[in-house]
Length: 270
Image 1 (tube, helix red, strand yellow):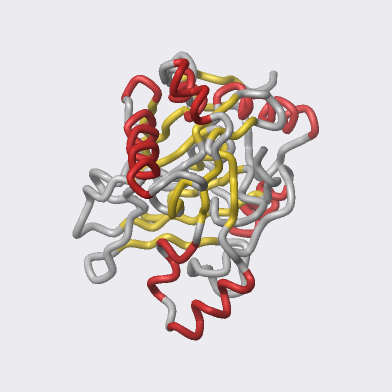
Image 2 (cartoon, rainbow, N blue to C red; image 1 turned 90 degrees about the horizontal axis):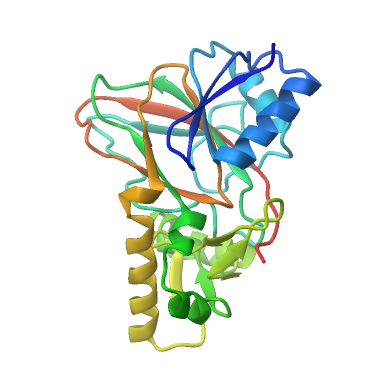
C-alpha cells in the first residue's frame, strides 16, 4: 500500500502513516526520502521501537555523528539525550539548525519523544528557503556573496573550562559557511545563519553584521513559513537541517520533557 503523507502546511511539514520504523524496506525508504525532501519535516507517531532500532533507522539515511558536547546515553554514543526537569531546566529555545559549527554540519536529525509534559514543550519549525524567497530582491542579492562564522563557543563553550575550551577549539575551529546555502539535492537556496552558533558575518563591521543577522532571524520568525509539532510519547520527528530551522518551546516547566536524537552526518554547505 505504501506510506501516506498528510501535509501540515502547504509547503512545510507532513504527518506520515503506514510505516513501521523497525521494518523499513527499500520501497518504503525511497518513499520516506522523497517525502522528506518534499516536506522537510516529517512526523511519525506511535513508533514503539527500541533505542537500537532508532539508531538503525537513522543509519538508513547516512552515517550518524557522535556529538562532542551534548550528553548521550550510556552505551549509545549516537544518541543525544535532551532532558529537562524542575531541577535542570533546558530547552533549545532559539531558532537554529543543528551543529552548524561543524565544517560538515548535519544533514538531518531524527528526534523521539520519551517523556512528554501534559502541556507545552512543542517544537516549531521554519522553512528557511521560503523565508529567503520572501526577502526583498535587493537584500537577497546583498546576501548571496556573504559568509558567516559559526563557533561552538557561543553555546557549548560556556560549559567548559579554559583548558577544555582551548583543546576543543583545536578540534573544532570556527567554521565558515555561506549566509545563504544551496540544498545539494533540491537546489533551493536557504537562510543559514542563527543566533545560537553564528559569531559574526565575515567582511563587514559589527554594526552591519548585527543588522544582517537580526533581519534574517526575523525572516525565520515569520509564522507564514512555520509549522508547530505537538509531541507525544514515541512520536518521531525528522527534519532536514539543510532546509529548516527549529525552536523548542520552554513553556512546560516544572514538568519533565525528555527527547532523544540521532543526527545524520552532512556535507560542507555551498
